[in-house]
Length: 284
Ligand SMILES: [Fe+2]
Image 1 (cartoon, rainbow, N blue to C red):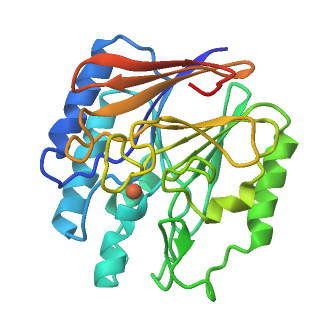
Image 2 (image 1 turned 30 degrees about the vertical axis):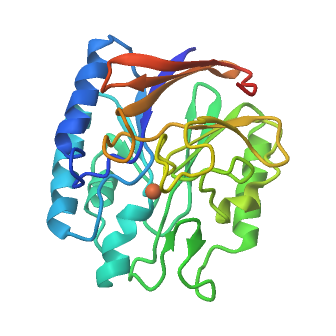
Image 3 (image 1 turned 90 degrees about the horizontal axis):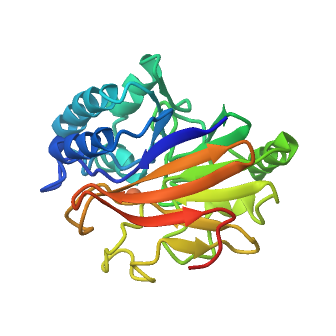
C-alpha cells in the first residue's frame, strides 16, 4: 500500500507575510496539484512571538485550512510554541489544545516528547517541544529549561530507541529539529537516538529555514544533509513562511511497503516542485 503525506513547518503566523493567507495559498496549491493525501504533518513553529491574540488566531485559522484537505493531521510543537511560556511564564498552547480535542488531529500529551503512527508498515516517530502541564519546565531549541527537573531521563530516550529497533520494519523520524551531523541547528536532546537504528530510513525536520542566512548559516541552501554515525540522510523541509525564506516550501512524502519511496519539495510561492528525492537517499 502506498500513502502520501504533506509535511510543513515554520508557518510563523504573525510575522509579516506569514499570516493565515500563506497557508491558505499553500493548501490551494496542494489541492490544485490533485495529490491524493493520506495525512498532513505540522512540524512546529505555527506562530511567532508571545502575543496570545496571534496564537489564538493561529489556532482558529490553521485547523480551518487543514480541514479543507480532509485528512488526519499530525502535529508537534516547535520553539515558538514556547514563546508565551518563556516570555510571560504562562502555559498557553491553543493549537495544541485543539489538536488534542479534535478527533482528526494527533499530538503527544503536552509533557510527552514523542508519539508514533504506523502508516502501512512504516512507523513514524513524531518528536516535538514539550513542557510541564504547570509550566515549571519546558523544552526549546533542543534542550530543557531546567535539566534538574526535566522528567524524561536518558533511559526514556533509550526506550524510544529500543522501540524503534523492535518495530523491525521501516521507520521515519519527524521533528521540528535536525539531528546532529548536518550542521542545520540540530537538537542536542535528540543525540540520545544516535547512532540511529539501522531501520530508520529518513529524518525530516523544520526550524532551519532554507535560505535563511542569519539563523541557518551553515549551508543555508542545502536541504539534504548527513546524520552523525548514520548512512541515512535528513531533509530540511522548512519553511512555509515567506519572510526569512524566499518562497513558501513544504514536502510531499510517498511511503510504500518498504518505507520512503519519494520525497518532493514544493514551492507554493512559485507553484513548482523544486526538489525530487528518490530512496535510498544519497548525498546530492
Ligand atoms: Fe523553530
